[in-house]
View 1 (cartoon, rainbow, N blue to C red):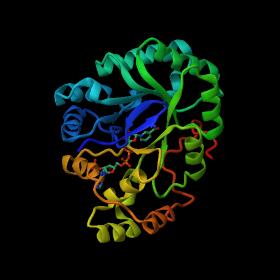
View 2 (view 1 turned 135 degrees about the vertical axis):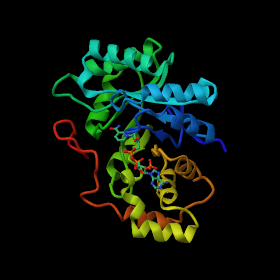
View 3 (view 1 turned 30 degrees about the horizontal axis):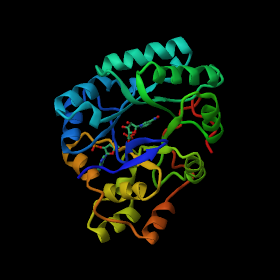
Length: 275
Ligand SMILES: NC(=O)c1ccc[n+]([C@@H]2O[C@H](COP(=O)([O-])OP(=O)(O)OC[C@H]3O[C@@H](n4cnc5c(N)ncnc54)[C@H](OP(=O)(O)O)[C@@H]3O)[C@@H](O)[C@H]2O)c1
């Protein structure tokens, strides 16, 4: 089954992606993911998986223009010259002619003026190195600044989002701005898998816990989960989420799992004041 797309400012993004952090030499896993139907692959210079992602894309034998590839420039390289150099390095790692979506991985406005980084981000698009641009781990104020300062449209915000983390305010802003919100750590990096509330819903639906969690993301407009799995069986399981629906009550039960200590990615000195 072809994965549906979300349209953000005219950009079509497959609504379910495949994450590759902590995957190391991931060529064979990425090739398998594409062969079984994933069309949206998430990587970053920081993950050291760009090379494997490129290899996987070539090995899968699916035309390049049918795959949506996201990569990210790390927070140490947000000065204009560094940024441009890192985009070239990512393309070299990937061995691709272009990126589909280039993101700023984490903000660093105290060290580098956001205006400078946003000009560099736009320049990468204008140079044909990426088709689209966006940001990750920005709060609402930073996101609005980025949109104002970037001469090319910001189409995507990538942030952590799963049932243990309430992102109501951020998601409302993303929808108001017409962006896609990529949900990273959608399975809470595996923490959700043992949750009894999700397990009960999964049992009732004849689905797995991971499938219920990913379905919860997919039933929220603008949200695009990008689960990672190094296991081909679980890769397929995570893709098989388009043949059932959660009821309003089940969605509410999952939203009610949000808790104050639910956030996983919160690096001190890098994380902004979260909304
Ligand atoms: N922008 C950012 O700052 C940022 C930060 C973090 C992550 N990300 C992106 O988001 C992607 C996803 O986040 P994540 O990798 O941190 O965590 P995740 O996708 O929430 O969870 C991955 C973990 O869940 C397990 N898992 C996957 N499918 C499963 C299933 N069906 N049943 C049971 N366990 C399952 C995986 O184990 P197995 O491999 O053994 O299946 C792995 O341990 C990353 O890979 C990366 O691309 C971005």
